[in-house]
Image 1 (cartoon, rainbow, N blue to C red):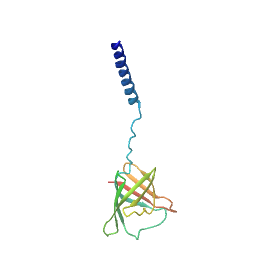
Image 2: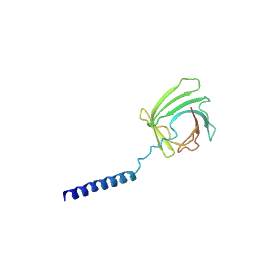
Image 3: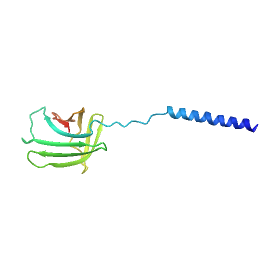
Image 4: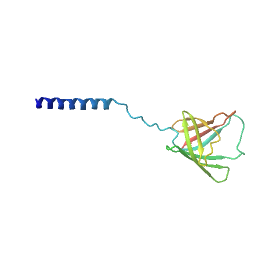
Length: 138
């Protein structure tokens, strides 16, 4: 009698182990983290205006780095001056890019972006005649 009960108990354990293995194997897969294409280093290569405009007739040089942790760094030089460095955080909501500088101030605008392997285009959202900033991946 004891032997039959023990066989049933062992059989029950085997069945439960098999069921647990099947349930575990069929469970939800962990969510994959998607790395936005914006991550990386970019250099401003073109400013396209929809109206005639210049930045004081000076050449603008901008280098921009978006990090995967949501931080950015930017070096900007106007004309023959010196580079001025900025940093802060960025957020990408669909195709709208926004951010804050490290002093807590919001960027001057949010940007509608399009990005491929080599080019990042940024158009300020809500401007009457916005310019398009074109960056090339470094």
